[in-house]
Length: 460
Image (cartoon, rainbow, N blue to C red; front, side, top):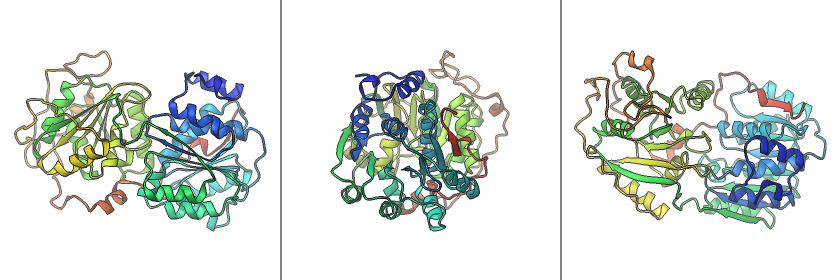
């Protein structure tokens, strides 16, 4: 099947072709015709399956007919985080370039005055996080009575972040006869209840159950000790042929300390976590996408929704506390038919977390034998300094570089060897508080510039 078989307009097919696509993914082939027929729909698909385009493409053609009115968006897309909202906006910009549609991005951290001005002009597409949308609605700056198409994206993430009450409130303010599309990687009971309440006779399209094994991703468990984890990770980074990699940690303090440790060892590493302001996070992601760095150390704020092409490896420096997070973390690789490898470092204290992951996925993850997994205590623990590795054997590197020389920055080699001491009270937080610490709500401050796509017309 080709995109031309799905009933999309010639202008839209032209934009899709120019973006380098001609064959839809399974979720796109199943969802696009149903959305064009104005049916309510539930899409169950794991990350990396092309889910965003499955609603962006038909929405562009649906909205091609009609006119926007001031403060009354014609369609609404709800996203749990600013990063996801910005990515959806980029999709509309890319695929809608031959349509004269206007769009506004309504997220926390951007000056509210700019967003109000965009809404007053009238928009065809409003992409918003629930918190900022409710804020402007309660101030009387936006009306939802003219919104005839609602998309609830990443519904299970919305549940994790406590947004379900806001979503229910928003749904009651939209026309009852609207079209509603709900997308989620999983369908826990609260999401099923939400769908039963606000969707009318929806068609359900399920692609590759999120708890099932992704055949494009080779998964491994690497046994190590708490004090030997950094040595084990560095050995893996040298042994693997890495183009780009994401390393996940459970704590923001661990992200910062591990990134600095890798930089001292001359790896081209950066970091992203919830304590960084939005402009810094965007800048770091841009460095990663450009190839200025090829290793990104991240907290779970980056685990879902980020689509970076060519990620060959994912490393779980910490075994995730929630098994769902494992699925979303390793989903950063093996995307769009590409192959990827995922390694999870486990210590004796991670047995329960590993069991929960394997129960969820229904897959017993094989143990990767490195011969160095039970390494001696790392020399770069607090108070002791590890000598930067000038020459290392084995595989590694980026692109066509020698396998014995992973890509590392010259600047990193010159950095002082001082390492911040690990805080004595850096203990594992209670599970119910972890998301507040590692995930950004929609209204955190954004110190960067206002995005170019806050409001614009396609095809102008």
